[in-house]
Image: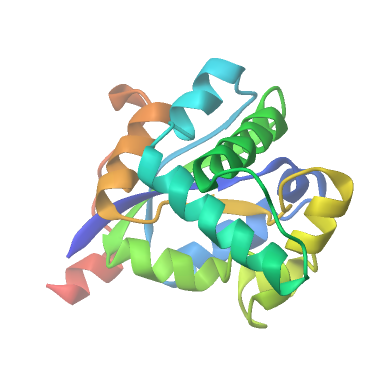
Length: 187
C-alpha cells in the first residue's frame, strides 16, 4: 500500500517556473517528499534512468508504429529498433539539462502521481492534470521536430521502478523519513 515513486521535473518545467505548482499538487494529496534536489545529469546517469529493456523497447516501438500507421505512414524498422531510437532521444534530451528529482512516498503513490500528471501525450491529458493544464505538446510535434514529447514530468510506472529510479537519482543518505500528520490520520 505505501509506495515510493520518483518524479522528474524536466527542463521545460523548470524553465517555465512550474516546480512549486507541481510540488503543491503532490503535497495536496498527502504525498510525502522524502528527497528533493536539482541536478544537471550526465549521460551515464540518464542512461541508468532509461535502462535498455527489450520488453520496453518492443512495447514503445509497437505503440509508435501504431501511431504512425494511423497517420498512413509505414515504418520499416523493427519495434525494438524504434524503441531504441525513442530511448536515445530521451537520453539526449535530459543529458546536461537541469532536472528536479523528487522522491515521494505515500499510500498508492504510483497510481496517484500518475493521475496527477496525466496522459504521457499532453494533448490527450485531461484538464486538471499537470500535463493537461500546462502543455499542448504532442507526438506529432515531437516527430516534426525530431525530439521527444516535452511533457514536463516523468513519473515511475510501477513500485519496482519507483524504487529502482529513486536509487538512480538519490544516495540513501539524501532520503529522509519523517511522519506527516495526514499519515497519522490514515492509520
